[in-house]
Image 1 (cartoon, helix red, strand yellow):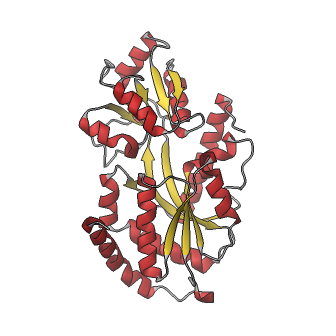
Image 2: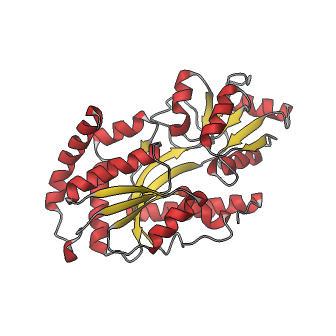
Image 3: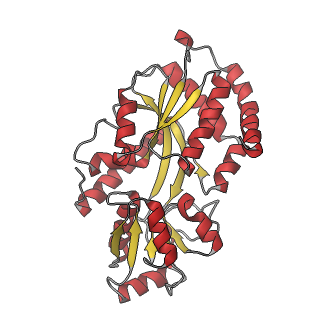
Length: 327
């Protein structure tokens, strides 16, 4: 464990100690064994980092081991299906995403869970908007200049995505429809290879999220032209917002939230919600996430429910218009 991470864990633990001391004792003596957080991401990424910091926090305040289990595959459906089928006793949690909870229901012909009925939402952790980035060879410094250039050169530009049906693909198609541009789609096996080709100039455009590209924006390897958000970014300051530039429907983000299986006892869900909110309010946690391009976004339970319903409707409409389906 590095010194920085040790300091972070200690500071988060101290901040949560007073909250934990005031929380009523839970029925059934929960937790009574190791808690596992099922994560649909490979180890090493920014989402995995936030899941592990959450696990460290819960381990401290709940006095039980908390482990992160990575289960990658089928766009998150494998992890979500496993978590949905787990015993609803508070010892299995799920690190859900916009994909598993709002996109996959419309994208896949069949998924092994119901994102609304099979989970109890504890709360959102963070949100990262998509953005338009281009290779420095593209002669456009603004969104308007880029759309004009793309319209003048139909089919000559290519954008990379992390695969068919990924949010980087779906938002790319949303962007094309909204701006009347013809940009060829090149699907890759993951975000890494696509970024490598963007930096190398094999493709000219991408629509990633900030954590995936922020280092390259800061170094000048790619140019950020606009964010698909209604809120200015704390980590990409100065990048203009697509809605403010005349495209109100170009709002899209990736996000993560903590869930428990449906029918998990309400006192357990409330205790977890209290501890999650304590972590999200921690200055140390916020600063650590900002370093890797992640912005914390906490919501009340009713706000998150309304947000999720709107996200499902938005992506269902987009996927239906694109006629994209995965078996």
